[in-house]
Length: 244
Length: 193
Image: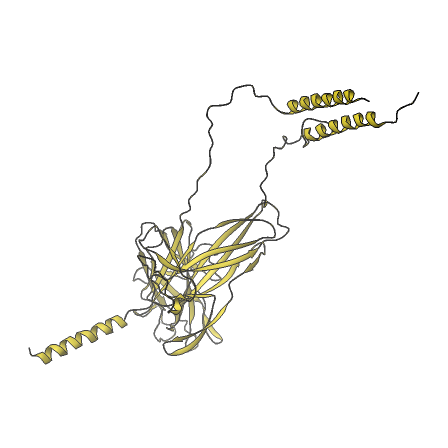
């Protein structure tokens, strides 16, 4: 085989390889991690709920929209603002409304240092998560949702809330467009800001200390007795003396 | 009243105060312990990861005549579609699918006309299968089907292939109809179908 035939064969192999690579089908991936399900807060305070979204196995950008799917107590929930982002999707300019987008970012063995900033995929802060199942770190985006607790919330009450994340992908138009949804459920418990602990009498008995019938504490009785004695002594000292 | 009487008065106050104090406090009746035990709690949270990847989608059906039953989706989209519980998943997951009505302008037909199966057999379930879970976690409005009930803690990806067929009503108006299919994963365990 002469040199020209070898070159032609080599070029054919390269072209077939590139065709095979381009023929990879779309893969739409939605990964999530919710670190905390139960929060503790106080009446009138704000709580920030968090969860993470990653796209370690897909080859399309995941476009995420959020909504409150279950809010039985009508809590005031503030979602991240909706962005109107312009994309060039296979040569067509498209505006997509989303709270965030998550590029395909594979699992890395070592966290990059510094984090790349020249890529739009890293425009929003990237967090590196550790799963018990895989070695390495999973690049992820963080979502924060603020909840304002009612001023008149009763201590000991638990509030339930579900935030839904929808992931959409673009580029192909089929008969059935496919999306993914992932719910995040939260419980928020109302507690007092300051810790205190006192022993209460058994149910049915009146609350109060020292067994005094007026319900006065021992400290109060002690103070009253001392005050009376001091007043008596001072009265004796300063009362007008009778001159004979 | 001379200073002596004042002194006596304060001594009396002090004695009464001491009596009240010791009456309130408990005198120790034993020597102090030489050791004491306390306890506390330690807590560690292992984060739960859920990752689902779809491939073989969107679902495509070629142009067809109305009244034809069980037309398979295209091999390039939906025959099969693959739902993979990725290896990063370390919690139990249930995965559900839900589809909306097929719509073209003012015309439509129900998603129940689409059928799925985990094998290449038309004896699969319609999308209004009786075996469906409550819609609360995924907030579905149409019938939902459960396609996965996985304890996926082993670090191995698990994939399910789902084959799709469609039957178009005989009197359906011509045109291009489309719908949306949603796959929802819930980190919970529900006794499955």
